[in-house]
Amino acid sequence: MNIGLIVVVSLAFPLLWLSACTDRRSYYQAIKLKDAILEILQSIAEWENGRLSVAKMLAFKSYRSNLESKLQMIRGYVLIRFLTGIPRKKNIYEVCALLQEFYESVWFCPPGFRQQAEALARQIKHLLK
Image (cartoon, rainbow, N blue to C red; front, side):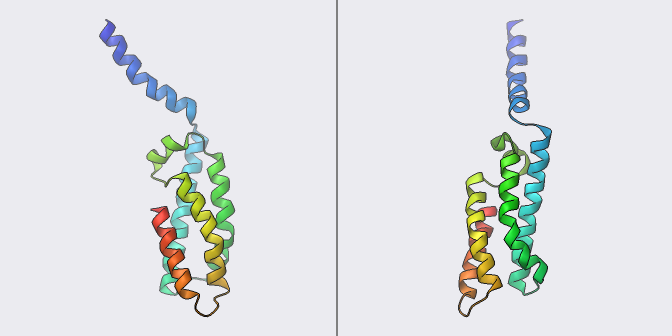
């Protein structure tokens, strides 16, 4: 009888902890965060191929606030991170800092800044994978 009780408690504890630390809204926000990350990676790939539209180029300006707001809405990030396959919070905050720099180097495009933009793009892709 004691073994059965131990098994039930050991199986129930992680589920109770998961439900206490996270909620459905957080999970959906994590899915939206993952979609935003995929959109950023797709936009960088289009920029590298030279097919990035002006609208998507201007979207780089809003990605930072979008990512930060979604991060703040997620409860139980550590658990949800493994369920959804999103990067660490630290990496996302680093990308938020780099996106403004990348936007400026792409939008204003001064001579010689293509190499800097390419280095920033590589760094962003590395952090988001």
